[in-house]
Structures are given as C-alpha cells and as structure tokens.
Image 1 (cartoon, helix red, strand yellow):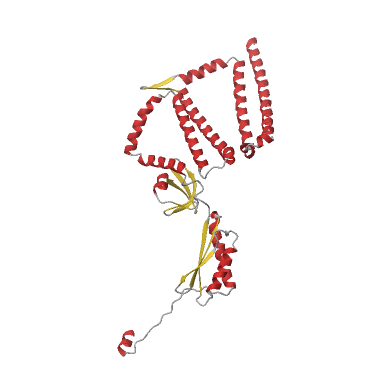
Image 2 (cartoon, rainbow, N blue to C red):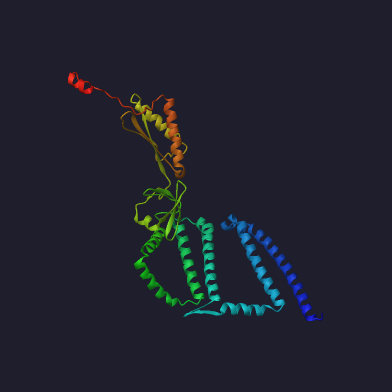
Length: 373
C-alpha cells in the first residue's frame, strides 16, 4: 500500500516484542530453577522459614519475577512502538488531575497512594510476623506469652506507621489529626466508652499476659479454649464446637478461671461407693493400684485414695491422681472409671444401688388402728 515506514514499525516492533517475550520467559524459567536450587542448599535450609516453607517461598518468588517480566515486556513494547511516553503522560494526567468537591481536593493518585501504602503495611506486618514465628522465636528462650505480645505490638506499630504514611502520601494534612483527636474525644464521651475500654483491655491482655491463645478458660457458664486475642474482642472455642466472641473487658474485669496459666496439669477425681460389708482397707488398696496403673498418671504428685464418708447406702471413696495431658483429661477420667469398675468386679466388691428401709410401727390401741385404716 506504500506505507513503508508503518510496515517497518509494525514488523520491527512485533519481532522485537516477540523476541523480548521469549527472552523474558526463558529468564523467568532460569530464575525459577535457580531459586529452587538455592532454597535447597545447606545454608538456606539452616533458616527455619525456608526449611519449613520452601515451596511457598519459591512460588512467591516466581510470582514476583513473572510480574516484573510482564511489566518490563509491556514497557519495552510501548517504547518500541513509540507509545511509552504518551501512555505515561495520559496516566499521569488521569492520576494527578484534582477532583474538587467543595473545599476538598483529591486526585486518583492520592487515593491510589493511600491504598498502596496500607497494602504495603499489611504485607510488611505479615512478613514480620512470619519471620518472628519461624526464625526468631524458635532460637530464643522466652517466657510464656512474650512471643504473642511482641507479635501483636509489632503488628500494631507497623499498621499504625503505614496509616500515617498513607495519610501523608494522599496529601492529608497531618496537623488536622489534632482536630480529629478532639472529635474522637467527644465521641468517646458520648458512646464509645465500651470500645475504648475493650481496646485498653486488649492492650492489658497483651502486656500482662494473664490469658494466652490456647489457654483453657472458664468464664461464668462459658468453658473453652482461647483461639484468638484481638484488639477489641477475643474468640473462645467451646468444647461443643461453638466460637464465642468475648469482649476483652470481660476477660479483665470479670473473674476468669484459667486452667492452663502456669502449667497443663489436671487432677482427675473419681468417686465410688462400695457396700458396707466390704473390707475398706482392701478397697483403698485396689483403687490406688488402679490409679497407678493408668498410662497418663503422674508419679509426682503421687496418686492417693481418700475414705470420704459413710454414705446412706455405701462407703464413699475418692480416687485422685494427676495428669499432664490436659487436652484429653475427659478420656483419661473415663478410662480410669472403667478400670475402677472392672477391678471392683474382679475382687467381688459390690457397688450398691441406693436403697431405703421403711419400718412401720403400728399402735396397739384400737383408736390408732382405726385411724391407720
């Protein structure tokens, strides 16, 4: 058709773009192989996070390298066709053109910078948590609850710093935060007391560490395991399988029973009654042997048997022993109860059912007899 320059531009640009695409694809494949080889070296495997999450880290690296290759190919292709600078100018004009509503003036670039800063802060928070949990904490001997407190504080600091950077990047005047703080104070005075109370209670839980994730709690009628401690509320997983959201203020101001605060020991107690004609000392020996024979029974504290009292229809005994397997204490108690029943049956010792003897005393007088009739 005579458009020689156009045909040369299209042919040359298409060929160069295709060659660059092939070269970048080959580079991505090579980088993938190098990443997999590097991740399996002794020095890399000495890092706990790399050793435990090799495939995940390699996949994330491949995603980043693929994204970088796409951006580089697109930029190069636009440059070959002479469209890079016009496209950049159009994008800048769209992003930087202010949108004015009254006294508020904002652009798409400001909005994009705001959300980008928050996204980067969230990624940095997750990365910091990942590194702390996988590499730092396993190498240190820290008191119980300190790792969780450090993790929470680092998350809050990173997210808070990210919010400040996001406001600054969006063009928001940080001096206006004083006005915002005053408005927030008024809001707290009118109806946000509970939210602030729960937030402060969450900070107390983090620093004092009276309750940690994984603890077994009893709060009034609620019994379960702490799954998550949040900034406002905590999640307790009941033994029935329900997730209960508990405000942090209830965990601080109320009376909470923490079964696993200092250790994971649990005392197993079994009450049993035997017939009055049984040999009480022999019964005590049998019960003590049963307790010591349990696989989860600890030698210290030692198991023991108590002759509790004279019941209405049986001699009452209590068997007590300790176990360190708190999570399975119900199964341990059930197995021990079965063992007590079997041992008493083998020894021929009766476990009586409750019964009452009723004696009727009749009056010899005719009048009393008539009234009874």
